[in-house]
Image 1 (cartoon, rainbow, N blue to C red):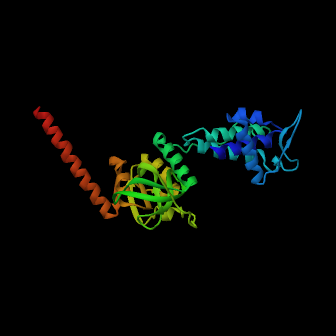
Image 2: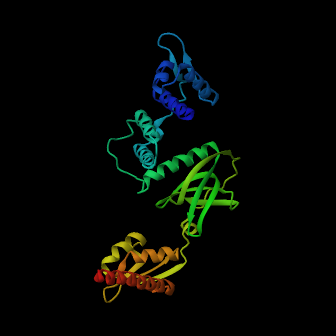
Image 3: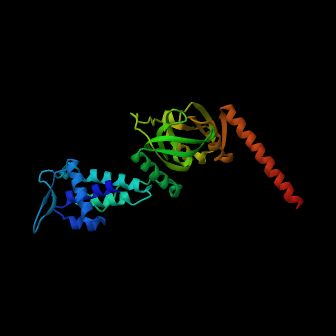
Length: 310
């Protein structure tokens, strides 16, 4: 892509005192004519590039323009590199790796060999997630409509949106955009999107507000939960809700009191504890768990009866 090559050329010029058009052409595997057009484009963008003819000549950035890297500390560079590595963990290409190499090449004195922070944003769905992120980024950059099938608790639907942001929040990736069906801004979880396609139709960029990613908006916690857990489940409660979510009772049980965001998810979460929890409230969750337990008992009871007959 041209923009990647322009960034690459500028990076080289910031790192080296001087280079030549043949060197740049060989590095980026393009013609000298293409490099000349790129240099012209950088000049039009306001980058003060000068060329010197003859032996020892070449292409360079005018003295005084180069970035003073003393404005960045070693810790600053470590944070930048950690951020780039985190993006590379979900990238479907080597773009961020190449960008890290460019930064390291020009800032070796600020980047130590020992890493102190590692961030991995990938998930079990990396194989399917990375192509979606890459496709959505292309659609945003080129102002193309995005079409996909969406799976939500309310059902399945076909959606077309004007994409504006790729968002990572908590443990999930989202795309934020104007939904043509709802006539409003919406947040769509990438793992619920299928058959994602970039339309050939372009859209005119709106004056887009930043997405409100507050936890209370995404996961409004309005369901009060009270439950008794076995003592050996305390580590899970602390991991997910913190140390102040529970207390120990006189008989050694763990009393859990918190607010939850979704009734269906709450039932599913409670089921992961098996018989190591008793829900006290809300009554609806308690009743649904009893109904599920009765149905499971019937299913497995029938299976056992059939096996005995065989």
